[in-house]
Length: 318
Image (cartoon, rainbow, N blue to C red; front, side, top):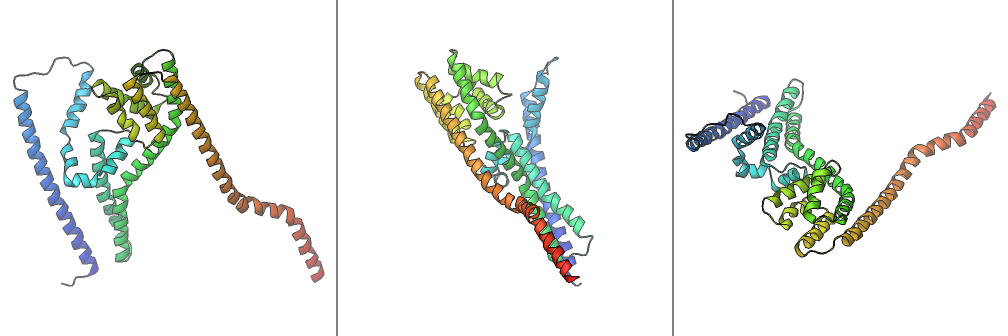
């Protein structure tokens, strides 16, 4: 039997499919064993107990909790899980506002599914035409890389948008905090009110503040509860504000004047950023004007002269 390139391609794809099936079988068998052990332990724990007749509004929350408990989150701690969902990916997921194992699991499944599905679709499409083997291999490799990196690209785009939104919301956050402190509220009361009543205005900072308040109510110190908010989005101004709040919570003292000075510094910083953007726009507009407006000006101003010269040359030729 002659080993042609087409036959080698078919054999390699077949071996790859068999390997994936074997790996999937091993993983499914291990997961079934773990599920059976969990069911046995659960039945032993719930022995002699019965569910309540009326659960009220907690039914949906309990069902969601059971659904999350049934997901194989332990795969995220394996070597393969840490390779597919690296620390950078987990940080991006947190920056996008999904700080849960469920979001990391969805990211892992989406990455594996797209990395396998896109090459299969590309192979099905490209094998119908008359294409060279190296072209098919390049397309399959590109499809695999695109499917593997697409979830991360989407997360990076959303995380960048949220970082920009944090920079826009920070001056308003400082002004609201200074206003609430000015009416005599404590720092804890001010943060609770901002999270409860102003989350529709502070969409990103309100969400992060809600996580910090929940951690604080669960027993963490104010410094530890605000640590995520200070370091997650990589904003130096937000980190400085969190440091100021931690110092006030630890040592006490008036906070209105420091917040006023901090707000003025933020607005001055934003003003300088706007001036820098305007300068960049001016430089970019120069190139656009040269390529679009200058030809129009030449046509309008020099067009009659060109027409006169053409007519004169035509008259001389006659």
